[in-house]
Length: 154
Image 1: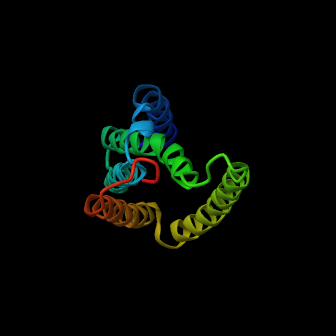
Image 2: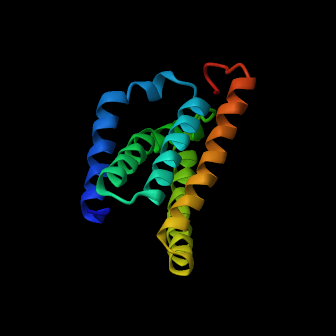
Image 3: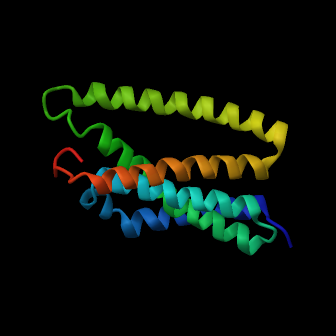
């Protein structure tokens, strides 16, 4: 049959956990732009697949892609946000500010996504979010490819 939301969410959750366990070392070894850009591109592809899914198998594949992209995204963003804070006592404040903006982003993102889904349906909303994240992810990867990363700041 068609997509099964609860089971699809389970596929996403299991994939997030498995990806964190298996690939977590990459977050410490890759430049942050590459880690964040790659995660956004993978998450975006998952959203786009989910938007067009007409069967559970396709929806599960989209959810798995989303899980693989989501797993490294926030650890990489956190690491990137703390890259220049150092041991000067700014680390706690910097990470608190990052956490605060993340929380505000969840609130605004959830509300605006709900409105878009209400107005246009879930397929256009997932497709729009996927395309926007794809653009940002590709932009980060292109930006990172043009610059030689400094090991402590990139």
